[in-house]
Length: 133
Image 1 (cartoon, rainbow, N blue to C red):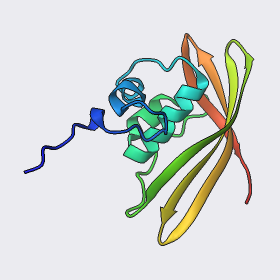
Image 2: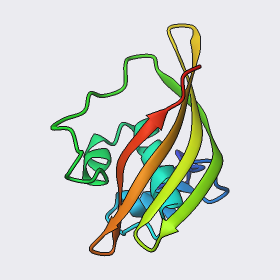
Image 3: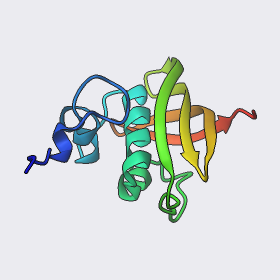
Image 4: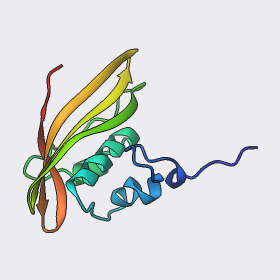
């Protein structure tokens, strides 16, 4: 019988070379992400892993929805590409990314320029502009 690999020892879904436990797993466990980029990557990983609790907790209260729906059955996240990042000032940043997925036999791309704010020392997702295909 092949030994199972603990989730924290699997590659991180965000695409960085670290294992999940040393990458996005620590942000998911409650440690504050030190930058808007790492928060964005951790949110992508949370979408992949269906961590709705983390997605809501990392969304700024001023724009946070009351709830999120889990991933559709059969949805597969395929990867994340960071396009650009911009530190506006000490507490505001933007991150542009493309997230790829496949559902119902069709490939999908989410291309977004996201806005982040640091509030009381913690980064939060505020909102974003989705590029139309």
